[in-house]
Length: 145
Image (tube, rainbow, N blue to C red):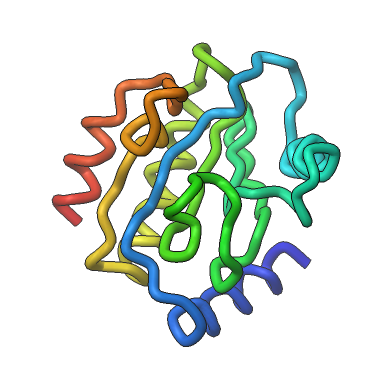
């Protein structure tokens, strides 16, 4: 089913929504075993329709799909309409598996959204520090693709 969702994403994302930003987040919790479905449950309890992010990367590097790319996210107030949200599990202790999965995902997204820019959530609000990792290397990588 995951492969089917990814195929649908790829086929319809550009037709339905203009994306000019890829925004990095963290879950702000070091609770073990976080998954996209766990975040989905947390977000529903907060009144969201479903998980606010498009992608969620677990500590082991597994990439969970949240919202489809053609769906408007709920991850950065005022910027959801034209962005893709990626969240890494954790608050400060991220793994190499997560960073490898993020690199891989960025390659895919760059192919679909070549003019989009890469950002951390904290760039859009002074109330957040996420993604809580140094993402300048990821931005340099993104810009080099």
